[in-house]
Length: 223
Ligand SMILES: Cc1cc2nc3c(=O)[nH]c(=O)nc-3n(C[C@H](O)[C@H](O)[C@H](O)COP(=O)(O)O)c2cc1C
Figure 1 (cartoon, protein in one colour):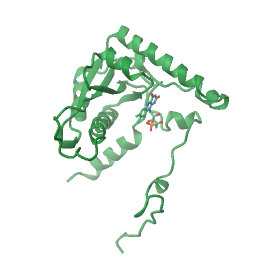
Figure 2 (tube, rainbow, N blue to C red):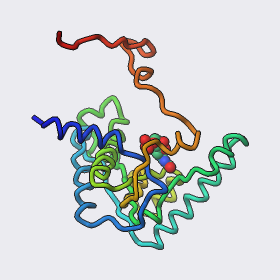
Figure 3 (tube, rainbow, N blue to C red):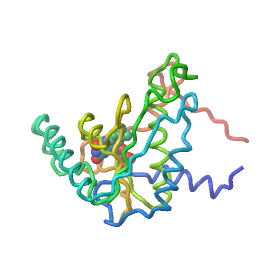
Figure 4 (spheres, protein in one colour):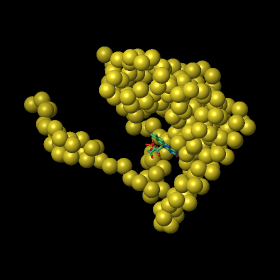
């Protein structure tokens, strides 16, 4: 169905995707690319086909600065909550590129979209939220393919951002995404580079039959 080249390109994009903070080049994403990555987000799977997401694009400089100021306060509160050694490690870590990226995309989740009888959300209410998160991942990978950087910012108070974008009712902002052209993508996640937390090997994350049991890979290679 897909050529080896196309398949390898997809795996490369998945591997190269990074959370970007310091590498935004300072240019604004073009309108056509912006719509392509939003279309990719909108192609995400969703429980009961509810598509519970919306995207609020923020490019006004003063609004970007206002949100960055709020985030700086939340970052400070987190720093203040840390024991001294962790605070020392955290200090040089940048947690956002809100102004430099020049574009913020606030992704919202509407738990009421689709009404009361949502096929697939009957027992797992969170499946609605999962759907909106999948839209974010689609956007993130599409942006990577376009040579853009994306940085997910969650250092905010939800009521502040709700008010900031004028969301009403049950609609929740679930992410502020900084989106823009980059000078480069780091090869290693920032939190690893700065010694905050390393990733774990896949073999630790995969189990056979029961959570916690190891998965011994079988040799299925053809003779
Ligand atoms: C739900 C979510 C919230 C995040 N919030 C922030 C954030 O507020 N600030 C930040 O710098 N990175 C944030 N990140 C990015 C993670 O730190 C990053 O994905 C992780 O360290 C792995 O790095 P990588 O994405 O470059 O592979 C967030 C990621 C996710 C999935």
